[in-house]
Length: 205
Image 1: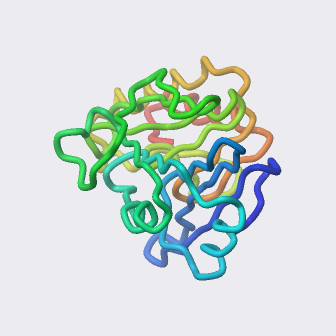
Image 2: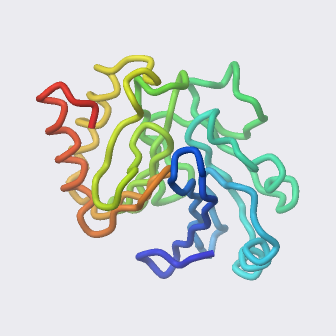
């Protein structure tokens, strides 16, 4: 796994040839128990690394299309799973918790619901106020610039744009860790502002 901008954050990735981007997973290392977000299948090396850092207590899933290897990893590590409350009736794996906006999975990791994406509900996670972790809706297919899913994949374009605009109320965001594409370090809130600005001209970002 690769260390990110904080000593307690790591990620691992898988390259998607069809889109020419990385799919990403994040782990927050914490004394009270580690949290994985949208975990992909892990190489033996990465899994050994994770075990050496304490395994995982929770797995947080942003949406039903990002379940990925969560069930397998949860079984192997004895971790509990949390998912978006709006997908409870149709979610493909069992969850111990269902999260809505404002819920803290663990201290310092708060859920934010994003409407209008391609699944019935989607979560982002705000870590200690400064690091935003996104799933499908907010992504980055080139370095330094955020974008939305293409309009044809959105269930409601207006709601999706409103969800991004609402993220701007979190003024301390510094970094955006995306599930799909390039992470944005240091200028995360500015990148969100620039994405929201594109909506004024009718672009999808």
